[in-house]
Length: 121
Image (cartoon, rainbow, N blue to C red; front, side):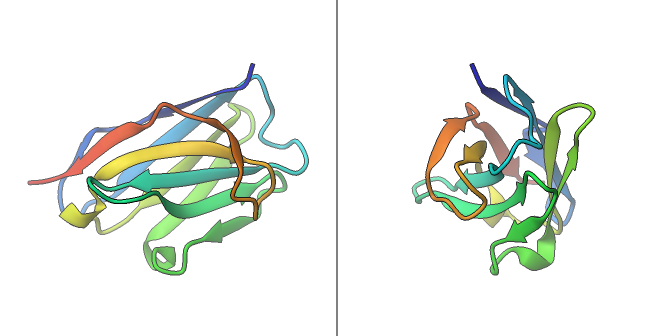
């Protein structure tokens, strides 16, 4: 059974960096051809695709967030991480990690439970 679990601080101050980690069990993040993805949902809004890291380590970002987003991985721990810089209250959201059937797929077969991140001073 594949499981994903997000972890990180629930409260971040404006202008600081948001850092989250997704720990994966039951599957390797280096297995062809999955895309390990970060998705968020602001309050009252729909899901927003933020970016993904492919099985081969290549990264892809939403154009609207590219300048502030970095996704990396630690294959020894089977984890991938999100960093979002210069956060504002508009970055308040539930953040999810998910496994895409490929880096470009909009089909996600496994999701983390989500973690609430609030940006506030």
